[in-house]
Image 1: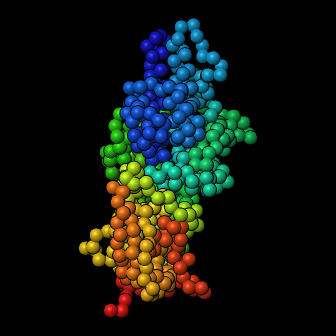
Image 2: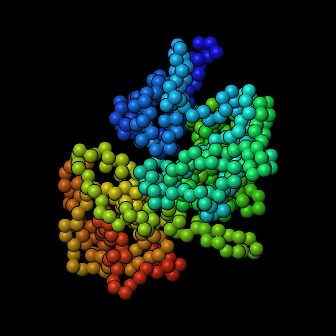
Image 3: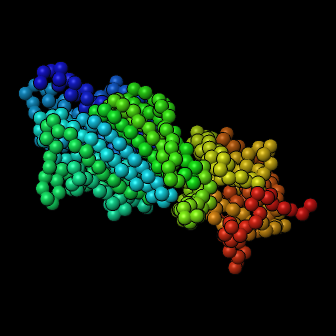
Length: 512
């Protein structure tokens, strides 16, 4: 190997590290600026590393690994880079402790001739089946192949996702991982076992013997695993980590859910952009299948497909011999990103904002509340108006937004709200809550309340609300205090199923 080959190897190792950083940053839902802030670097530094303008350092690798919780994947890439640099140094072999673990046998090189992924969803569980045609273009036999299993229930909300998986980690039993090659079962060994991330070696062997992939040979392997929809976010990404000749993806959903699919493409030199060709849709036997493919994708390119369900339902029953899946209202809200009953964040008082010092943080929370409200409003009508509080999107800060029943009325934004006065006169009305939307409860509340809030500039503002708007505002302030409306209900009164509630689509009524 001459000096140019060595230089190429170093560049390739640096490129692989940069791609790994970009991948995990995207998985964790962080912008380059936010990752740099958390790592304590200048905002442009992460961008320079990902673009290749700056080579990785040990300090950067350690900090990135810690922040992104990448299961040592980033650290391994940095060790690869260090080993490649050491090979270019005169008369120096890398010290034993610094040697990177080789993913495959020395002298081996894998090309993926065909990569086919199919993700099936039955209304409760996702089952991913991967088929790959591998070719050994090296000079040594290959005895194992590395795969990754990575999930993110709440893309763009890393703290919420991390907390979710700490309480509900992926388990090997639920994954039920299977793998075959040439019709033979493949053994597998866990390499990394994290709450939401697994790395696994698929071994070209089983109890009957070994069957390495020899130089010049091609072979199909297939592996599959399952993940419940409470742990799988509505996205699926294919990262091109090895030279690949053809890549295809199929997503199969119950047609009753009325799914829609879109996708983006990113690379080391370009931000996310729409897929160059749209997924192709077909319906077959009650299943809607979306297909997308590309040839000779660029190394380290990432293709991300996302979806949402526009259909209203997900309980199972038979209709004319066909299984119908109906979505419960609470599941619909959960799918729209609303934290559901039982989550600790709903039972704890929120933390106030220090305004105006925390103005930027408050603005971001309010922006996310409006985005959530918009998303929810697209799939459910709210004749009485609606509100959403920060804990309901997994943020324990004192912020809430209320949209009055009158569509022409401005939204009410509340930061650090505090009720300073309330009327003695009260009434009882049925309320719903996005965090347990399967029921409605009869809740007594004052007909008038006065609320003090803080503006982004740090000024105190006092506003009086009456009747329906007072009820909405009071409901959301309760959320910020860690209370659900059930805490306000009369003793002996319980919520009723939404099917028994007959006032959907009607505003609250008050005596004149």
